[in-house]
Image 1: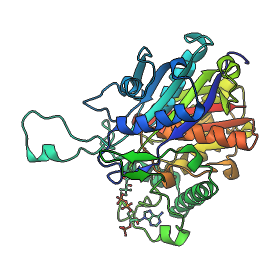
Image 2: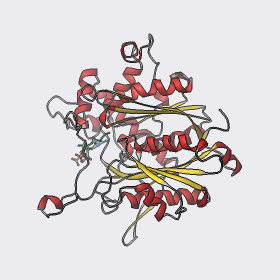
Image 3: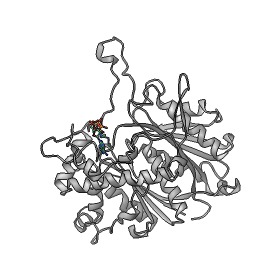
Length: 404
Ligand SMILES: CC(C)(COP(=O)(O)OP(=O)(O)OC[C@H]1O[C@@H](n2cnc3c(N)ncnc32)[C@H](O)[C@@H]1OP(=O)(O)O)[C@@H](O)C(=O)NCCC(=O)NCCS
């Protein structure tokens, strides 16, 4: 695997913000434009070399349904660049990256580059023909499973109970998410991945930092929070769940040959990926525990080969449940048809720059944030392999292996 590889050249995201706060009046397109423009500027890539744009978006806009194309037309990219928009729920960003990665070496030969770019802002207003009062209320994203009616939070609660994930274990994952994200913010690693967003229409307010991160959170503060989704017997709280978030992120991909000929030092290369699904009627957010083994198998690598692991934290209970499955012989036997567990997840290599609990989770952008952070951190540590995973609505799971 040399010249056929797909290089991750760079990534950039907007600061992530609690939904309905600083980006309240912005659209997904506004946010996507901000990070795509910044990515092009920072990398000094010749815009005319951008051959394709793929955007991931979970809550489509009625005004700009093909967000990818609108980004092309509003950021100075060549108007002849085709673009499309994909939805694989919370793994939409990953899907966009995988689609560009599939196209890069073949369709785009060695002379082009492509941007996979992902965005999410809250859906604004529902379409209406007769105005009723409830039409004027912003529509909130659907976080209930259409097939079961259970919300994501209720599903996480169910997983915590069935898998015996304690409140303390969940709070520890949340605590480490904030602690690691705070350290990576303090020393500049995460700020280096973000752009500043000037908020229209006056452009006087500049958003330059994530606003969900709590540098001062503690196990005691987390333990004091009440459960949200099962108020009596539950363990999932506002502290150990990812919050509803607005933000966008973009990743620049090129064929290895193009990156080299242009003088870029790629952060990492895409080695393999896999998508899997579980029955949402069982444990909804277990997709990663199926996708990870497949991605590793396609990469001909073991879990123990991974220098870093970045797992999307929809809920701490989901992270703990997936880790439990990867380390379980029963899961291996019953779900993977293997005699041995996939292996131990080294917690010291997990989400070393924090995760979605601390930073937030704009549904369509998280996969690009994770890909960028994992690639940057792998390069910084001179690691060889990195693994990322994302769980998504409908019981989906996505995993990708990066290499250097
Ligand atoms: C869990 C959820 C309902 C909480 O929403 P919320 O009530 O708006 O959350 P808030 O940010 O207001 O937090 C509630 C309280 O917890 C506190 N809190 C939250 N995280 C904390 C932390 N780490 N440490 C200390 N306190 C914390 C807040 O300060 C707030 O306290 P207050 O009521 O005194 O102001 C919401 O974030 C949610 O729905 N998350 C899941 C989203 C989802 O399903 N996504 C899909 C996953 S793929």
